Image (tube, rainbow, N blue to C red; front, side, top):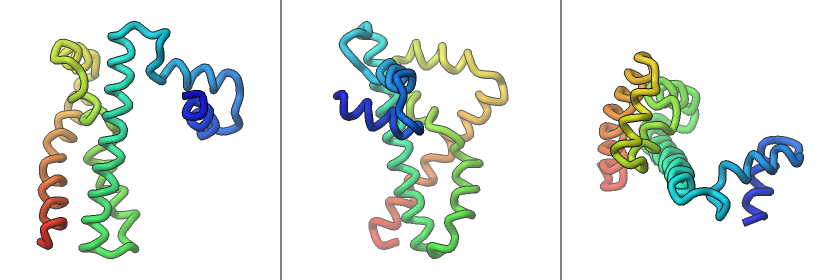
Amino acid sequence: MLNVISTASSSLGVPTDGKMAAALQATPNDQMTPQAAKAATGMLLGLVDYKQAKAEAWQAYQAKNGPQSFNQFQTEWNKNVPNAAAFQLSYLPKAEQSKYIKSLSQDQQKQLVSAINFLPSVQEKIRAMKNGG
């Protein structure tokens, strides 16, 4: 576990005690309440899902448009799915989902809904690519 935290904190730049402490607090651990550990785990799982979906979407996009199209893909992806919130939301209990959504500004809520609506079309394209379509 310490290796994971050390790696995570060093990816933030020069490793320091402060960065190590920040990484430790954001990583599920035995000093957290069960609810906090579950929430932190959900946030991390959502981030993994986001990165995996983005990588798969890039593979599908690249297969159709070539590797030189990465900047175009990146721009489109960031416009439609600017962060991992749409993925992380699914790991929250329904009550927490509602609280989270209410904590967002109207613009952020619209952005979240837009990302959630965009994702099925991405998933369909990935499935088509995997099936040779």
